[in-house]
Length: 418
Image (cartoon, rainbow, N blue to C red; front, side, top):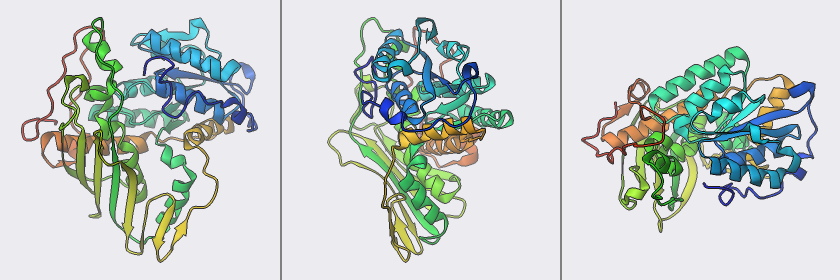
């Protein structure tokens, strides 16, 4: 995600200022006694810049005030792109650009009201903790951790946010898609009866990868290719497939209690792809005995499927646009961009004196995905309690540029993850 060329996976260079102007400013007082909402971006690659555009489109009071990233080229490239796209809505001055591993501390101290947390997931527990301790409202991308210690940290931070009346909105944008919301209301009202089985998929081709440059240290190479290192991404079952897993947890209104899975590294065997797997399949079981089949794959030339499917005693549903059976229904209406809607809910809550706290919710879905990865890496059945209480910390002992050994590819039956 270097510079402006890859600034958004959803078309960052679209014009969003006009859309933002269509919304009235709710009553509220923030920076300098005005209705301005100063937003800082922590993690200013493509996802961060895209989220900044979504934030500006969501509320006319939003200005992008400060930006931080480990790498100067990424934050400077995204800053230039935001200045071109958002014009005077991007008010990031030179003294409010922060780099290095402590960049988040500068953003938090710059006078912002809210922050967007879009650095790689391995950094997210610490960034979230520091943001809430600093009294900031938060939009936090998913997943919120890569290991159990990180999840436990997010639980604690979420509780602190509740005590302080601070908002945490998570980037599980399906929960802000009106079609999903309307379908889920009906599902929770038993339109498909008792849920008997859940299925979720994120099967697709490969993603971007940057070949290592001679001047890059181990640490720089890994962070610039964060998708492929478990300490940074959690592997793609956690980083990407958490979206679909979250939908099933939403439908079930609970998390699974155990997982048994298999996976491997069949095609992406080049060391340039780090040490993660390229496919997973996991059977999860909820406390009431309902099973969820979870499947994800990142292999070029394979069939694509990104969806959820729920089977009930009275019908079935794709959890968003249709229900089939005794209470058949189909979504019909406008479907606003959920990537914008999640930000709108955050800023409206801030301005209206309300509180949204999705920290525990997204942390539970994150741990569900981690539990599946643990099972696939080890070849063992893993329970929720085992996953939650795991002491395995994936982060390096020191966050600094230099040597950073890549762990071996996990081997089921030999790898220990507890």
